[in-house]
Length: 215
Image (cartoon, rainbow, N blue to C red; front, side, top):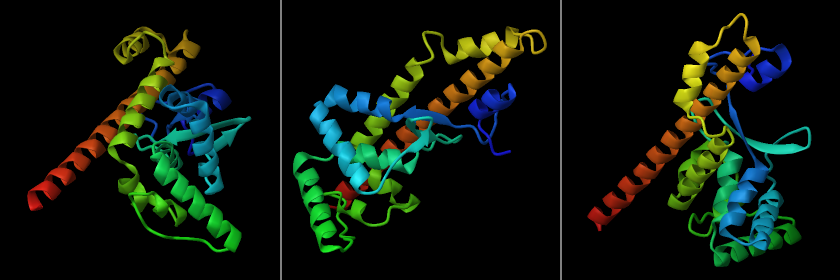
């Protein structure tokens, strides 16, 4: 079936290397921990509240809310939107919150487009909106989250895990073997997330350079 390795290991007791349906979860709590390291708790709560008012949420399982990173390292769109909102300036946040409150009171939906203020978030967000969401600060946030998620595996490196997997016995050490497969698969996805973010950041730099040359 279309299952990632964590689900396979939990339900059936095995995991597969290079499983194309594999994902990595980044818990909402981890995102809030990152936010609180840069901003006040009040700031983090208000930005999360606005995100929810806009109708967004993460994936939910057993009272835990999280975001998925796909096999190719692409972060869930709702995560990008949350990071974008957290990083809005106070002025733009207040303006967006006011527009949302006004449109809600009028019973009308607003689709005003303004990448600078984030008003485009009031319209329909699709995969086409990724480029607008992947600002320099959002890319930096993704790299920080990748580091925080990676730290959950302890002090051993990805190469250490790969060496341990090669030494483990598939028959006599099944639990160890498949647990290592899960760890390695997830850490490779986190590595792809970094690559995806760095490429997006470099594309943004290239775009800004071309704009300066034209001007």
